[in-house]
Length: 538
Image 1: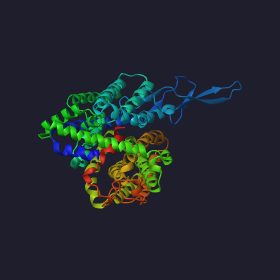
Image 2: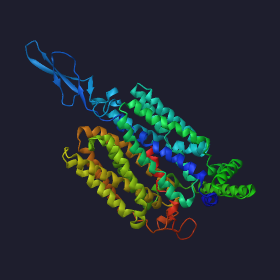
Image 3: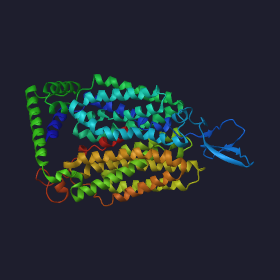
Image 4: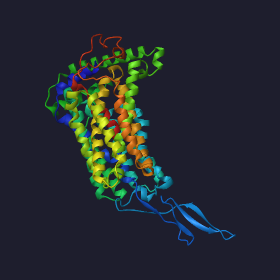
């Protein structure tokens, strides 16, 4: 296989300064992501407001929700009637937030849904464009698209600060989602040794948790949304410094036949890592073997795609793979709604939304540090079932607790966040192991898409339904988490079981792709976090 030969080259290079440069580049990108993925938490929050009716003697008062005011009029017969008019001017409470998009563009009453739209539109853009960016990465190279996406994303984020029209701001936010693809993560994984890939996949995701904590801390200091957006945008430009040192993916260069460039990159890596490579002639032989295997694989796939059944998506053709696809997609969708919903609920579950986000970041850390040893001990299904149920019960209980017991509300919300984060981490390991190699990337793609859809839906639950019926988000999130846990029941446990190669092997109709019984996959060959962070960046 292509991967085996290139993995041998990576093993020869070892892990050193050259490898760490890619890891640090990705970790820095992960650190900055929460300020943009959860941007609406502080830029477009729910703010208390009061209607300011016209200064007329006939004004009788305002409605309870401050969206209407009433005017008394006297008819010709001398009867007094009351007419209602929509408010067009409000005074906003700046006790918690000094100046936000909500107050500047009056995103209240009939325009309240725009707050959720601001938060979710970036995720919607990511869903629509992620496949195109993947195509461009394969065609034009990882580093090229790394530069394009990061420069475009940085400029778009900075442009929001200079915008004074909310429609333009929404457009910029949408375009940010089009360029939010984290190519740095793909590069880091492509140059990482197989034996360290699991550990690296977990460690380079840790800065997400610290970035979330930093986002809450910075927002508590900068009360004006423009200054806060500026603070989120400027560090993005520091990523440009990595472009001068990071090389193109040698995997991609080899498959594209750019052998001289691939040799130059590998020689540089060997110098930086203190390793020794074969001669250039031997390297070129290895490159051609890799290219030949790739051509044979592509030719075989093209030949196989001549049956009528190929018009049916592979993930839906057979009963077992169809069941796995539908059930896991449903679990990912519901879990994603809960994950994003809890993160966006600082105004509902806490008197201090800034502290709430900081604590949400703290709750993420066990998901990256405790989950790995836990699943090696208990497997995947039992911990996920437990955590999703525990999360559901904790969050569902929030709907029945009086609003004045703040400490209990905060504690249960954080418990739910902790359990959801743990379950989410394990879920993506499970996703990798459950799909056969033949359709694994397709399954992962569908799973990531469902997490993005869930993340786009969540803001409408917290920001739109929450103010109308405060208990509804807790009920939706709690029931969703419990339902997700029971959707796992029909699925098999993967602990101690071999990873299957083909759909036929999954259906029990044949052996692995190589014609032998399945061989157990080394646990370091899976990267739990590779696919999960495509949702956070979103």
